Image (cartoon, rainbow, N blue to C red):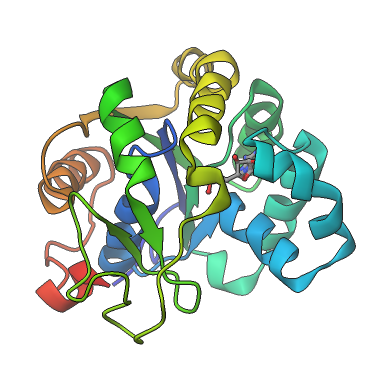
Length: 241
Ligand code: AMP
């Protein structure tokens, strides 16, 4: 069973600083709810990998850890959300990130009868820096690892497909600090925006526990907000993918 079969579709907004675990928790939610994850960071990196005009235009900003233009991400999300697989709801990972993006998103969702649940993953600054600089990603399947909390079985090698793991350019320490500065200045204030617009807001401490334990608290909190969601947990296999 998936979200919104007999009710309003829900946009789950994964909100938190870079390195707070939005990507990992989004994947758990995908397993649980069967609705797609929309990661603006992944969409933008995909443009860079494919060498599109958009990819060439944003490469400098992405490498520096700066935000790309609101108009661009608003348009990417607007088009993606209209695709058929999103009709029962979506998990927004890394969007909205500025008041201008939220002001574009919220009326868009409300206009089509969706409501949003904002999941705020709160983490300590120093924990985020060490998490992010230890982060590795599979360039082929996108599985995320972390030297500290989620190491691969063989160092530097993806458990799923054996590809050599990579450090994202923007996970280098200087860039990480720039991304965190941007978060503080432009994204964190959005919490007040969400409060004022009456969005359902779930605050979760995501600092210390293992990702599975954080997800358990998200799941319990979401079930308290959105009635009728499936009880069953993803399988252990699913939790690691
Ligand atoms: P992420 O993987 O979500 O941490 O995003 C990586 C990078 O993509 C960010 O540092 C920005 O350069 C860009 N980016 C991703 N999402 C957004 C967004 N919603 N608004 C502006 N820039 C974004």
